[in-house]
Length: 474
Image 1 (tube, rainbow, N blue to C red):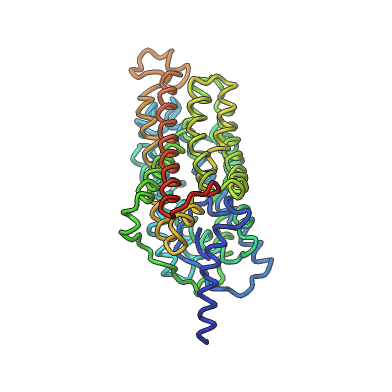
Image 2 (cartoon, rainbow, N blue to C red):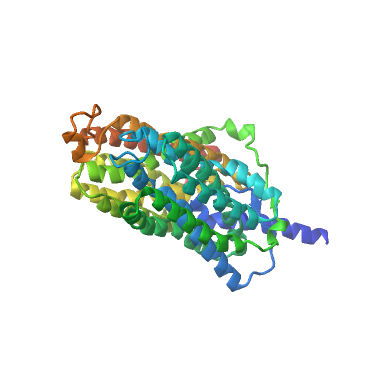
């Protein structure tokens, strides 16, 4: 994951730093540890003064609140997309344009992860994580607030996509780089608490934002969300006022060596990360629209299903980590990715209400495995010394993948009118989204996830070959 006068003392310090990073990836509660966050920091804290339990609790609370907003808001963009593309939209040219509108959300969430490429060097350069965090939360909130004044699609690209995405990355990474350094034996459990905020965020924000959209409209919903985010971000930033991070130092190079780049495992790992991120975004973005357009449920029910999916996904990350400790992290990750693709084919394709409800739960369970276990498997495959550089690059690739899946699914759906209004409006020249079109989206999504699973499985095989031995538990 991220961060954590004699020659003898110097040697002990180096040993501590390497041990700390290793423990962050092998803690018993760990596959689910915060390694699930995909943070790619190159920092490991020098042994800080023993933190008080009070400060540890402060960090856990701050991290929980941060993931509640960053991951929670990312996961509910489908609610905004449903509104932006509906007949009630306030955005000129957005009605029925799923591909263009979904790109707003994918840019925002993609930049959250890809932003590690510039945020991590910034963390390494400046001691004050508090200022970085506060500035990030401010930019993130300004993006949401300015989006409330948008009347054109390009306004959303500048605000709810670029500003929001850059700000969320600056908000996300500092606390995820600091927290592991303050926990040793309980690091996995601690990061599990922090990441639980993401599921709770989706569970709470989904019905709250839907209620705001229904009662006060899109503009005030965005403004309330922006103010809410920043108000809670201030104490989160203040929690990072300790100066212990001044002892941080990088471990290993921040650049991926060409030797690693030429390895088959690295190429396939990168491709698998791209495909999984692309496929993982599709159900999240179109779960609500499928509920409304095909299953004829209300938008309120759609938002509830989205909340259930994100909550299940969050809990599943912890469960997958525990399972991985017994079955092997690479094994568990391979199975979770492949089975998530299979669930799309079996449960979403041509789904009726009962089967779609099953899909919402099962996909939430299975999709959590990759996010939870990727960083730990990176350490196993490439070694501790290459963890920072490889993890940073892989999550940059995942950010690019997030930009690909949902917009292409939108192209497959095509330009259309929503629900029954479409069939009654003969002046509209577009098409009504049917189950057939969503079936094509399901095929596209399932293919991405299964292909990602094949890549991850091949990495598993190549890693065993390179190490000269096969272990069933890896």
